[in-house]
Image (cartoon, rainbow, N blue to C red; front, side, top):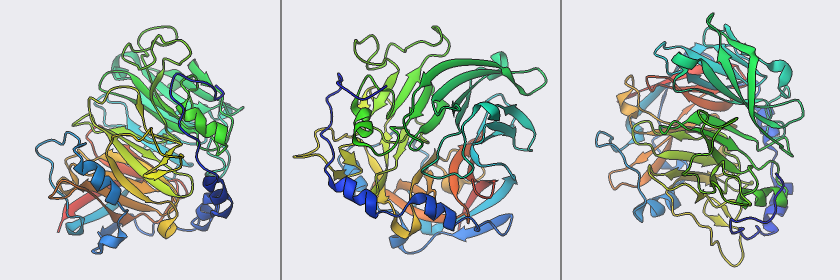
Length: 441
């Protein structure tokens, strides 16, 4: 899937300024190493949100975009946010795991949670084994930007209770992306011998591999693939319709052999393009999520040494959205003379990549649970190196405001959501899974 000519109009190449920044930037891997000793000291930690707005990630440009009328479909029950009045706690609910990278549920009414370990295993929250394919998975010992391969995504079929199907995204021993289906056994575990490989994609680099797998309310499976590396040709691949890297894919796992292409996909049946592509112009779609109440899609994007940002695709957005990379890095335009691919989507969060010890945005979820009404309707996300948890929500004027609410004391690898809508955060270094809770003070 090499970059090349494309039915997508190619974005203008970023200037050489981006290359000079690469040599001067601190390596995120070193930042991760400096935090290795930081671990939660108590099972439950209560943190009051900072009173100074300066502590928040900067959403100024996002507010301008939102003011232009590109707003989501917030339910009438959602409230405006004053994060200074919210007290947040984290409760240890599982661990130790080996490099936990995701937690999710099967949607089968059982209440069970499944923890994906980067090394190639899926465990239940109580630590018992559900699936072990570690012998097939390429996963270095240390989680870092330079070595991001492993088991990256997990999604259970919407009818898992009936068919027992689950889908896993991992890098095989050669580094290729593998999307496979497994079948659960009557005994409760998943059968490693049941693997059916649906998709294989060559990945030229060890970093920016993406990872997310999830089913939408349309019943289709969505998959995130990163561009890999920082080479200019790889970045341009995000704008190439023949290249699956730098994209969000959408496929129908209930039809076709080994899968079907939904008729509504933007390049379905089009010569010289891949029908699996649903959205393009992404650098590393590692963790994106749908708001279960509205259908809005939140897509975080790590930048190239300058900006981290999160865009929101309102429910009903047409397939084929161009999110702008590599011409755009948040609101920064690298193209000359300008950015023709500027997406008309709400940029709800934007912050400097290395500000305050941060290094990479980690996408989360809009909170729709019942245990913490104070968080309802807030988008919860974090930063890998900064161990910070933020909430983004609208103020009384309808503008997006983002505020730091918690520091976990570890390296945030991912967020997760259970069947009831409660949210979880993972410390990949400490191997711990925490549940978030909040109250209004």
